[in-house]
Length: 399
Image (cartoon, rainbow, N blue to C red; front, side, top):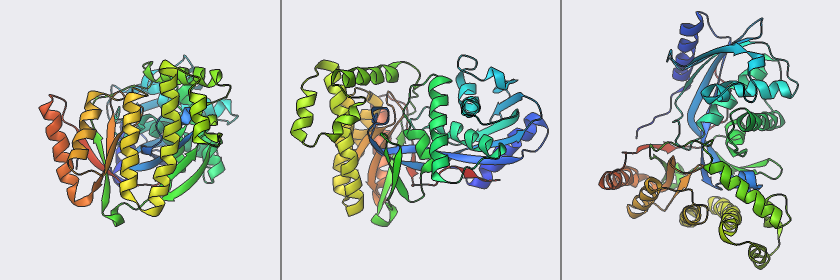
């Protein structure tokens, strides 16, 4: 498989080398935080629903040192073209953009929350694929937030502290980077547990860890990066969020996820019948996707992998038809994976490109990857990249 994760020593070395090259000094600390892949529960986070992601072994590494002034200097990787210098006062909504907003945005959010920060020097290195729907932006935000919180002398250890940091990273992404995302990505990067999926209830941000040892069951979660990049700030994502908010208001609830509390399926369908057109389709996806999260959790606990695969298939169809966030590259990957022996497959992430996932018998992993590649070539699409996703740990200090 391609797109291998870096071992921590390799990531530390890369981030430290970038720091030394940029600032002619050694960093004081290095932190790492992962990307994520979502098993099921897409576009439910900002609707107050359930999601079931896992943290990837692929991480962003942040090498950092404090300064005695208010200057902030950033370097992304080893590329001399990705540098920025300013002050803490420059980091605010409308003050920075592009990659700087993701790297520096957490500093603004922490200061808004009352954390005293000095200036800092920061260098990043990452093996999380960008634009692949695997939360490369959240990995950056969370690694930086952890590093800055540590430099400020505040705790990063307990779950309450991690939940607070996740909320601040969401605020940074929404207000500084201008991407109207929910909180699933940051929660996963900061609160996941190795060997487990993270059952996240976005109504109250509570979490539960669901054991997921696919290898012991003779299975793998194959991630297919279509190499069609997407941006969450391009308007498509925001329009769907606005439609859901409008639909919720029409139904007299704060978020569409509130409808999940209706006791009966008939009651939920009666509520949906009050909507029509696009609003009805978007709301139907949200409610059925929340139900699929519960289905996959139950399947994981019962080790009923066929049932899990069936729910994954249904999720993709709902995202394709009702939420309309799939694309030809994702559909081709999903269909080819199923035909080659996957128990289930679906797009993952915000959509409009990015990645698909397939639940695959271990002995068929290469076969499924080959079939997906062949299908892409036959359709004249970009050749995809692959890796096997293993439920991994959340962000931590690595040096």
